Image 1: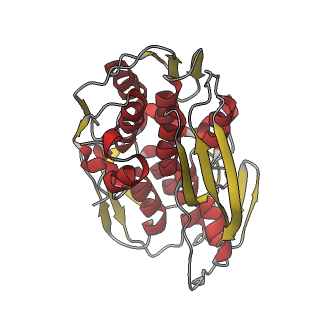
Image 2: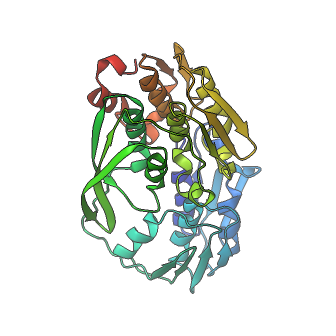
Image 3: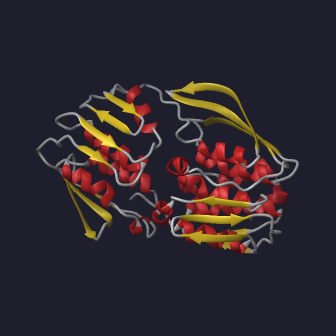
Length: 348
């Protein structure tokens, strides 16, 4: 049971392919997410994978006696999840595999596996993986997730007079592009106490609110490495002057919800000027926000978290319905929010 975590489903497909008989399933939102982008290249490697629904979970994997074949494969969509699933499978293949991407994607898997003795080499958009025997690192330090921290950081940037420090956050350059976009928007962000944890760069992030923000166009090259942070950046953009534009983000349609549609609906529920594009979102900032009494996550943790940013910007309490999904990426979110912003701007 993978819950509503697409990462869990896709990585387990790579880990388990050919090794065991297994069924991978999840909640209603996960059952709407495509699996062919992982299943098809794994089948090319010889894995036995089926589904009783077209390109959707549940996923059935069959144990086999043959070793997986190596693969030379270029992904159609830049996806760290797909890449990681193929890397994990390629570690047990009978020869060297080469996995390419149309754009640079997050490299947490490569860093972790290298620390565990994997024979792999990453050069920009391509990873070469040789069969490898992994060894335990003994102790693995996991940094705080900047994709979760960004909701606190955006809220602080939107609240005049605020100052917030988030400690020991991963600032891997393939994951922290949202911070670069926030800076382009005019947010005051400082990085301090830099160090390394198990091959990952880590630091404290400090943001101060109250500076005038401006709308920007997100560079297309950054979209694959900040795809999860787009709802948060859109929420921040409603407090900025000018127009915020993100394009080339069609992947948002196949997340826990259609995030183009649900993000725009969320922004509009606060009175913001937002418009959906075929592959992105346009937000025109500067309108006075009016908080609704209630919002719905549509089963998507990123939508619930983005609602919190908007509530902080509107300086009004709201109730988030169907909020259990937030724990997918941010356990104990409500307690953390209270610690950061106090009861006057706290979700109920």
